[in-house]
Length: 242
Image (cartoon, rainbow, N blue to C red; front, side, top):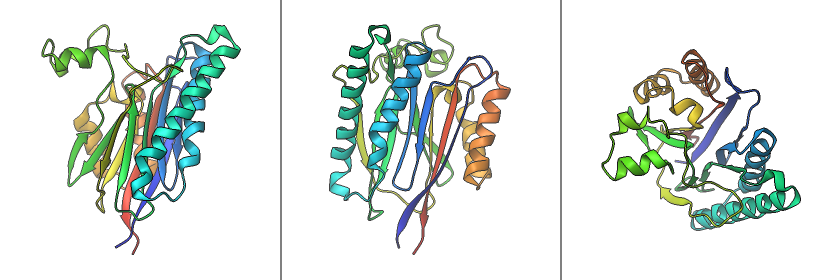
C-alpha cells in the first residue's frame, strides 16, 4: 500500500472585507493556510511571505526530517517578515497565522505545524476532530475553565490571537501522525470555522467526495452565514494508489 496526498484549495474575499489577506498552498506533499493581519497591504504581504517560505518544502521528504523541515520553513518566514518590517516601519505589527501539513515521501507519516487561529481538522471514519488548538485569548479562557467553548464563539475578544508569525521569536505547535487511507484533512482560516458549525463541516466533508466541490461548498456556506472575513479552505485526501 502506497499512501499519497491529493489536495485542492480555494479562497474567497468574503462579503465584508475589501481585499483578501489569506494565502494557501495546495500541493502533492505540502498543504498550508495563512491568514494575514495588520492592515491591508501588510496582511497580504505577511501571509504571502509565510506561504512562500514553506512552499519549497513541497518535495519528497524523509519521515524523520518532516518536523525539522517545517521548523526551518517557519524560521525563514519569521526572518523574512522581520526584514519586511525593517524595510518599512508602517508594516509594524503585521503578522500571519500558519497551519501547514507535510506528508512524508513514504506515505507512512505526516507532520503538522501550527501558529495562530487557522485550523486543521481530520475527518476519519466519519468523525471530525479539530487537531490544532487556537492560539487565542478566548481559547486560553476556555482552557482555564472561565468560559465554555460555546461562549468562546460569541466572545467580543474572540479575534485576539496570542501568537502569530510577526518577525519575533514564536513557539509553534508541532505534531506527527500516522495517516490512513480515507483520511480527509480540512485546513481553513477562521473565516470558515468562526461561522460554520463543526457538525456542518463534517456533513460536507462526508457528502462531497470531489475535493474542489467540497471546498467550494464550504465557502458558499460561510458566505451564506454573512461572509464577515476572508475564507480559505484546503481539502487534502489520503489515498491508496498502490
